[in-house]
Length: 147
Image 1 (tube, helix red, strand yellow):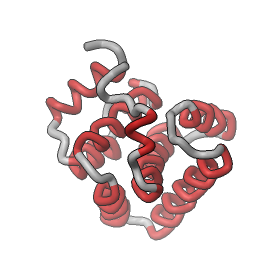
Image 2 (spheres, rainbow, N blue to C red):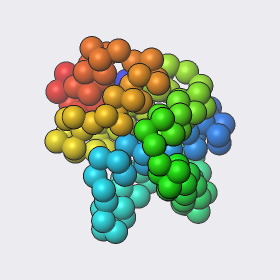
Image 3 (cartoon, rainbow, N blue to C red):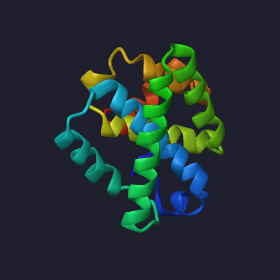
């Protein structure tokens, strides 16, 4: 298992608010970079459900529904500053650099590499997480099995 993969122990130790922040980050990058169709959203939900959240399926659906609603509300306000503030607030709710790195590793595993190549959203998360570009490259390589 990659050191940038969530274990059941990692997830068990996270409060629900931190789990929500992880889901918010995953959904924000996914939605921004893929402009998902209904089947793609369903595929994303299936992939996200494989993470060891330590929650009942309906609780996990609640996290995803909340992430979708918060992002939609942020986009409705419009403006890059608003989205950047939203990303900063997500980062503030993720309790440690280790959890932030695992969140980034999960993003790299869930979202196709070609979709992330020029991602301003991913770059904003790296900055908000305090992850330097070289470190992000290391995380991406290991998360995708290229290390």
